[in-house]
Image (tube, rainbow, N blue to C red):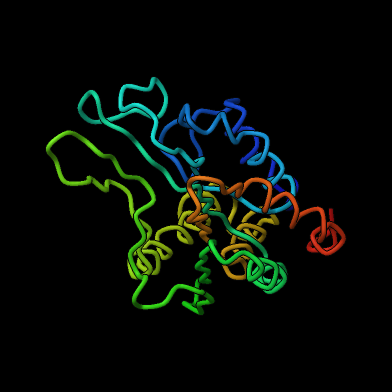
Length: 221
């Protein structure tokens, strides 16, 4: 573990199911991630270290083999989102790029708690998965919550140091690399609120294509 390329390989191996778990997950990738697998691989090849994601879903049956949940004869919805770590040098260009998309919201925070977001206090809690069922209120099992995100970031950054870096000798290059990532990267979540026509995968791949040189220059390629 001597470079960010080595780090990326671990994330990629997890996505490709070559390893069953790694510091950011206790279990294998979910079935729904297969729909966005190519984008996840592209992100991780380019130092967007993904730890959570889902594709958009617009009214599929609650009995759908991949996306379904809850009682029968219901309908399930999802907003596409990605959660990942990125180098601090990439954050500002990403934020500037995302401002072009008025249906996309984002939150970014580093280990120190320094935050960049376009989420207002009024929009603090964003349902990203919900179900509609007969004679029931809408059920929202998954939300993106700005306050909870800032609490969760402590555990997320500790995973680099307390779960991963400790696998190596304290003063080794591998330990130093993983600790440096924890100190210098941002944890980011991006939600595409257009669950009908949005294409967050396309947006992210476009950003990478437009900023490939900058990405390549961060920590070397």
